[in-house]
Length: 311
Image (tube, rainbow, N blue to C red; front, side, top):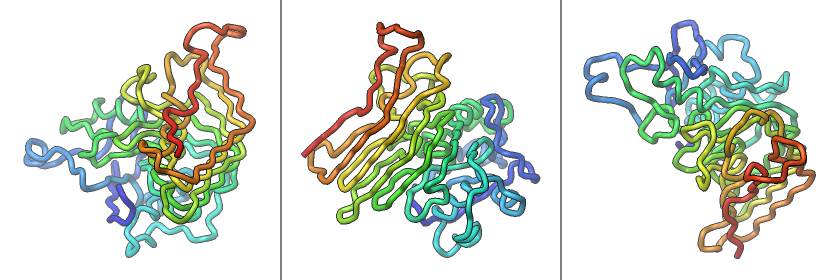
């Protein structure tokens, strides 16, 4: 899970066809030997990326560049340069559709190529999960993105895992699709924790966030009432400065049930020992109604925080 690892990249078919994310078929690695098919199921100590060779040698899209950048952050320092695009790397567009790409949530350490830029971001966790049992799975091993024993653990589970001591500023961001809830939690932007460094404040701010039908996937299209599955940030710890502006929704007309348990998960430690936490909101226009002037029923409920612990 942590940064500083070896990189394993597998080409799906020799030509670099993207990972199937339609929810109906599977073209990820399958065990080849009799021993592998019958004795060894999955390898929880290895993370599988796909098609990094063909992506790097071609003309990468912005989404592919983001993938390669994330691999550089995850890789051990002795090999990080293999997928390095240089400090002059600047996104050419605004679309980060991660379909077909083996993007994993990573610990955020340094500069982010899309800082201060407007962009859309789409993940496909549900489609990856359901596709595992589809045509093409020949070894009968379901490599779940939320299982610690799987090579695909944390694929399409958010942009970043932990941001312990960094300043992350985004422009206007549109979030679509869905992210998975793994062992540590869930969140499109941070699926682990913002903050917790003892001496440095971790900051996040944005110009605007549009939730375009985005939801947290926990095994069904909508999560069960009472479940813990935050949508934007999983948790906020000490020495964290979180500023969220201009949050709005679109694309939920046909959505049924809860898209997430809350926008933000737990704030502060359970024993209320965390301090120096600043959270600011402005320009928030969220409306869960599906019918105008209908104020009845639970569809009108929107929960910002799951739990808050103040010192």
